[in-house]
Image (cartoon, rainbow, N blue to C red; front, side):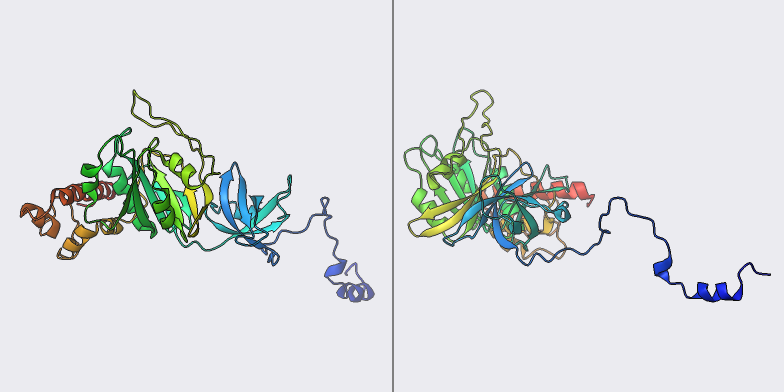
Length: 351
């Protein structure tokens, strides 16, 4: 015999989920959800610089209300890289008043992304800047001496990112850069020369108008001096070259985006800290040949799947070298190209 009578059973059938006791929530917090707010009130901004988790962004660009705002990133973006040059969506207090802090809640699609790795065998990429469409490579004619191989690497990184490269050679009053510049004959590269008493501010400035240009170069080549000449209120620190080691001292410790204002228009200059190496472990080897346009034209006659390595059979570039059809400058570029390709081949285990 059941301990419930018929009446009790009928009453029990009428219970619903609201009658079931629930465990109380002592913190009275809302249940977690993956749904995020739409942030329809977010404004678009440009990231000018990053410093210890704080982002200086420009709001109202090219309007009378243009001003800078300090922001932090939203929790949902903790795994998203945000770098100088990014276009972001910002909410909160965007007045820019002292002591206020806005919040970045979204990152717009990037048009370009300049990256580098620690070395050629490191597949972990370091994002340098976003949104640049030009790269100005700064190299000194002497003190420190120019490094053609480092410039080659900048060219490859620019090509991989879809960025147009430019080159400026500083300190030409101390040494003749003619021999160094022969290395780049045949490459589509606009070149400027600079001396202590003649900085090509107007010529370079004209090339900056309408573009976002990232400045890169070895420490001590005069990059910060050039930036200060182009953007008088930049205030980038300048240094000197160690007479014993021949190395430049790192003066710019952060990447920052600066507005260039010239007679013919405006543009953006992104100054980066000086580096002594620029790894390409993240680059697709198939893209490397494109940085050497004259060699790429010769390589069109290579068989399908040609590695272009020094021992590659039927490689049109190797055949041109053997036949004496390459200029000394082209031979130097071929050496640079094959040296990089060999590094990739050794790392990937390809024959």
